[in-house]
Length: 55
Image (tube, rainbow, N blue to C red):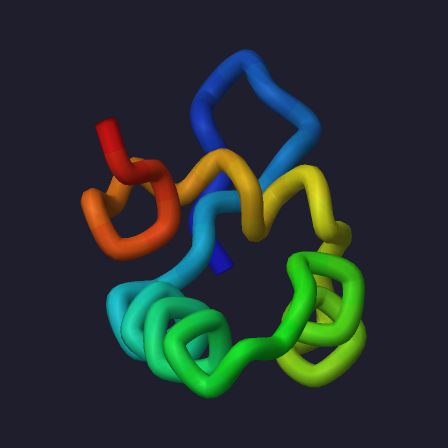
């Protein structure tokens, strides 16, 4: 669990980020993904990935 120096929110690990992308590709919602990996749907939505945020 990493946190920015001046932030209360933690960053996801690389493994968690990969899990989020795979779960999203399976059709899971941000809410369900957050429940499964133990974070909020907002954190899931912050992942900067073309798979989650198409242009």
